[in-house]
Image (cartoon, rainbow over all chains, first blue to last red; front, side):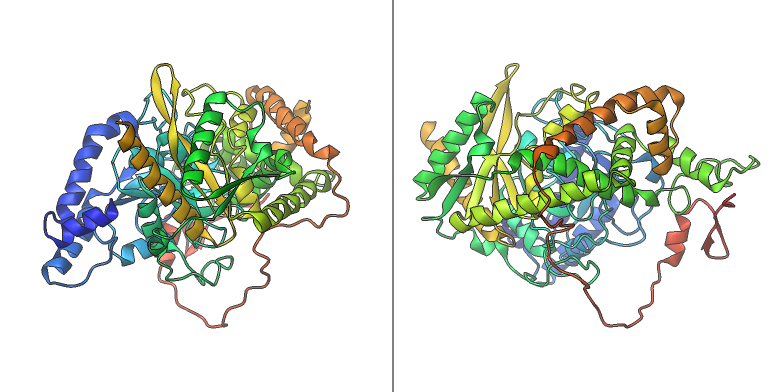
Length: 491
Length: 93
């Protein structure tokens, strides 16, 4: 899609300004039902588009992504623009600087249409935990779009943007991509700078891309990836790699592992069938499919739900009513009120400003890190993490990548899991391992599942070797083309 | 199940104010999740080295050069209370 729009811009079949207007027309039509955006930036986007149009008029070369409308998840900072991270505690927070990923999009003149909705501080799996609004799944408005990058996924799926940035701590790009029928990539930990991404769990968080095609994801990744001295964990290699150039690569002979632990008897038979059909496509593309084992898979989810809250509880300590946004009983908000102690400010501000899931994770993390429990929970989970990592190292000795369903079920109904946190956590079962091991993973549509007479999209997930996004993208791209071809034949 | 005092203690450590009426819900929710963590108990891990991240990198250094930052006003603008270009903090006691 990006390549076609780029062609139209160069051929002067449309202008970047018209493109922005076109996407805002869709937003005006659909946003009232979907509620994907928290902030819209029409004026800013039009200014950026105008610059692109002027460049084209002057005959200057423009980047492939120039003038192509994008959206940014609300936990990624854009200078001068409100960034709430879906939380009331940051209701009035104006970002003082650009995240590196955003700066790189601006460098190639991407008009950014708005900031997308998300679960508060990227804690959740449905976008129902946003303190502002519940984003709806474009395929069935009664259902969740997934989360936490639910606004980004729903905006892409309903053509309210060409692509969107998201962040993925335990599946927050891939699970909504699966639920909304779009492509979502979580790059290798360290591939994209986290500078300007509000920290949820620092050793697991990674910025990535959601779009309608694998090629679009690759094009955006090329522009945001690479070393950044402002993020000490960003990898030193890979800057300037053009991921879209790998997409035509021959995938014949590649070996895809199917972990037996991911295809247990408990798997929904409809999903098993979709995975078997995907397997047949891989084979028809000349790839080899092999059963493998990731023996510690069952321990990944509990380990994740210890490590994630531990890191989050520490990161979220900064929202204390002193440096950002909301402060209960402060002089600005309630003049003349008697001032409490510092501790009272902390307690009251966080009681009022944070949602229930955020409080739950802070308490889980605080408890797991407290004296007497630290070894039994946190250290234990970190040891399990090393086992998960070595499972992958061993598996990648035999295979090029690993396939699984992205989620155990398609998009669920709004309100069905919010009262039981553990059930919500279980929807991350296939996605958290990639974050614990730090490997890249992509979710792409592999078919539909029928629920209450509605066809809901469903995603398959490919996990790859560290810093080998190109293999994931080339296989997912080949799959996408083959699936399109097969669809054509069946018509 | 966690007692109500335990929940209050954890909440205080995490600097979260809770209303009395919210405590039973957190007792139940947190206890369920801690029970779920028990899955790990059966797994022998004594000989393993814990890892806190996967990059394997340590002590990432940069040149010791200063750079000016022009965003101070914007940073302070976000704070609820400031004085003389500082964050204003209430008395500790």
